[in-house]
Every structure is written in C-alpha cells, then in structure tokens.
Length: 389
Ligand code: ADP
Image 1 (cartoon, rainbow, N blue to C red):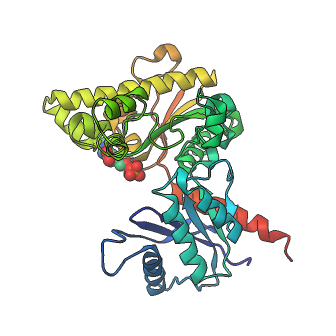
Image 2 (tube, rainbow, N blue to C red):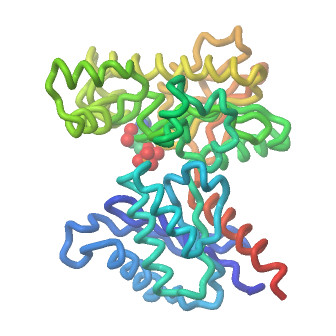
C-alpha cells in the first residue's frame, strides 16, 4: 500500500471517457487519453467497452490496471444530491445511492455508474472513490440553496440549488490563495469558471457560500449553448402559446441558446473574431454574456462583503483577454483594477492580472479537475486504510 502512489482518474461522460494517470508522489502525469463517440462505433458499443479500451491503452504503455503502484481509481461523479457532500469510497451501497440520484442528472449519472461498475469488475480489490461535482457547494447556506417555492413541493422533488463544477471551484479557490501567499481560510474569492458550461461561485474562507448553477447546470451565466437565468414563465409561454413540447424546450434551452442561440456560434473565439469584423450580432451576444457575468460579480461581492480575489478559469476565462477586460472594467470603486498589459500576456501558469494598487487581486488560474480528483481520491484512500494495519 505504501508504495502505491498512482491514481487513475476517470471521467465517464454521456458519450466519452477521459482518463489520466497521475503519480501523487510528484504530481507527474504518466498517461492521459480519451475514448470518444461511445455507442456510435462498432468497436465501442458502450461504456464497459470504453473502460476496457482505457485499460488496454494503459497496459500497452506498461501502466496496466494490475500494477501494484496503482493506489486507487478516482471517478468524476456529476450529481451527489444531498447524500454525497464529500469524496466517497465506493461500495455497493454507494452505487445504489448514486442510482437513486439518476433522476436529478439523467444524462450524466448513468454514465458515471457504468464507468464505476466496469472498473470494479476489472479490479474488484482496488479502492475506488467518487468525487462529486456538487460536493463543494454543499456548504451553501439554506438561504442560498433554497428556491422560493412551496417547501413541501420542493422537498418532495429534491428541488434545491446544488451547483456544479465544484471540483474546479475548489481547486481554483485554493490555488488563488496560494498565489497570494495566504491560507484558503483567510481569503474570500469569486471564482469565474467560464468554459462551454459556465458558473460563478462565492467562496468565503475556503467554503462555498453561493454558486450560479442550480438544481441543474442550466441556471446562471450565459454559456456556450445554455441560456442560464431566465424568467421561468417563458417555459409556460413556449408550451402554452408556442405549442413546444417539454423535450423541445429542453433542447432549446440546453443546446440552442446562450452564445449559440444569440449569434449562431458557441465558441468565444469565433464571437471575438466576428466582432473584429464589425458583426453586430456577435457584439450583442458578447454584451449579453458580459452583462450577466458582471451582475454575478456584483452580486457575489455583496454576498461576501469583502473580496480578496477574483479568479478566471476554464477555456474562456483562461484565454479570452477581451472577456476578462469587459467583465471587470469600470469597477475601480469596488477596488478592482485590471492591468491591461498583464491581462494581455498569454500564459498557461496561474498569474495575477490586476494592477499593483488594486485592492482586489484579479487572477487567471488554469483549472485542473483531474489533479483535484486525484488528490481527493488519494486522501480518502489513505485515511480509509491508515488504521487497517
Ligand atoms: P468545457 O466546458 O467543455 O470543459 P473548456 O473549459 O475547455 O470547456 O472551454 C471551451 C471553450 O473555451 C470553447 O468553447 C471556447 O469558446 C473557449 N476558448 C478556448 N480558447 C479560447 C480563446 N483563446 N479565446 C476565447 N475563447 C476560447
């Protein structure tokens, strides 16, 4: 057990499985890969076949699942409901409980479960840990987690705000504290995870106190293809007046809205390029995106009271200079001063982009969900087996 320091991280999505093998002794990545288009290819009909393919790829690299150096497998799990608020050692009972949560994440949880079952079959003796995307947000106070609807109805259908991207928000909020040379307990941070999916969170002293995604990943910021916040009566109107079915509304809001719905493009690079050519539609999409983002920055400023840092992460947050600039200009009265030169420097490292005199530090912190999952998995495994001499 003591020499086993490698963690295999598996992210079983609805149509793909991503994997990374990380050595916790030195943080080195020994292997990484992706199996795509599960169910669409004859050689990969289902998730079990995809996991077998991952195992084969690792074996071919001399890093097979039978290696004594492999300490555990960490699985990204999307929805932990109110049941899972921390990384959890997987047992039959845990898998059953995850199955009960399927209605809350019908697209994601079944894929997670099949991935877990397939790896348990291959290595029944190896500890496996589920790291939930919702867990970091479990510390949200009830006033932030509750929707203002009838309590009995809400409880009956598990309707509350769970939040997502938790692993990323946790990693980035801790990493930004480190960048400032402070302990996570001593800083208040607004994290802006801007990828294809996007979410903001308010983190006080290392604990999440609010986040923009809700019961599902549809709430909150404008995203690549998702609407984010809207008046819920729009759904009623589309159904009653427009005659759209529930499935059509689901498709509209999750896959044909956001930047894509507003402009035809869901990729921020395209939006920025089109704006450069004078495209008014792209400019409007950008403006709607930024307006929503600024509302969340302001909202979370008020929720936290004191903000030490604002951290940008994920594809857009790490790379889109104009997005970071537009999100935070004109907020000097809040102590936020971006340095335009630092903001424009491309880098893959965590870095500060605020001016020296800015009361609030502004940072870009590349997210690393796989490393965070590996770390949490390693901690759970060491804790679970340290007493078993
Ligand atoms: P996911 O949510 O799928 O994990 P990512 O965090 O990888 O997404 O972000 C993907 C998005 O990042 C792309 O859709 C694209 O809009 C955006 N992106 C990546 N690079 C750039 C860039 N240089 N400028 C603007 N946007 C970028």
